[in-house]
Length: 259
Image (cartoon, rainbow, N blue to C red; front, side):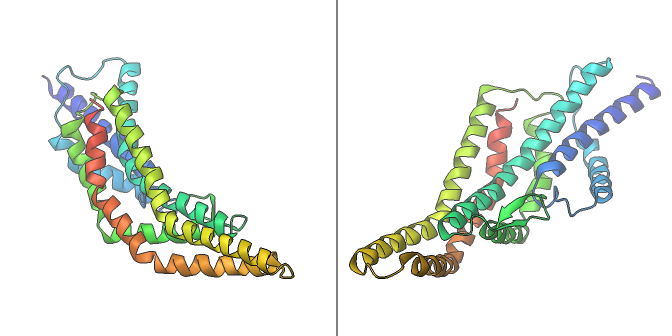
């Protein structure tokens, strides 16, 4: 192969690696934050791609010679990166979902704040739990797992070999099932406590009809919800640590079905 042909092959491989890293940085927690300047994301992506691509094996059949075929290969690499980042993002989505369930039960459902990370309106408890989740994400070095997953992903899904198989769909469905399961586990203590509070208030309403149950019940539910939420913080942190420790396993589970 001539020098020009070899140089073109190296450039094509570098762009493939860059596309996968770019997909990760678009959706992964912390890396995909809108607070991080785009220039910093681009610079970090270029540097990581430069470090990784020398160890990436080239496809046996080479790259498509036409632009459309090569663009489709780039698109598949972006999807692989998005999948890796989205596996981690589902954990934080579970936390926000649990926070929304808690807020609706307490009565904070109409009180929304702007999340500076995603740029969306979120509930108060959901935002609080999301911040704690991000701190635990960084504290458990889970962001290192994502960077390592990019390198390991080329062993499971080599360049230009991503396919949408039945096993891949099964893995995605399992991740969403785990997401809802985690959200309900996080919200369960507060939800159960507030359900008992509603039962107690219903009994009081029948026993003391003169009591204005709405005036008494609303602050009581807030107090009970916040008290149980504070007591459940250790369990909440334990659930998140377990999820972040299993992050690498979940990524491997999905990527094994993508080939």
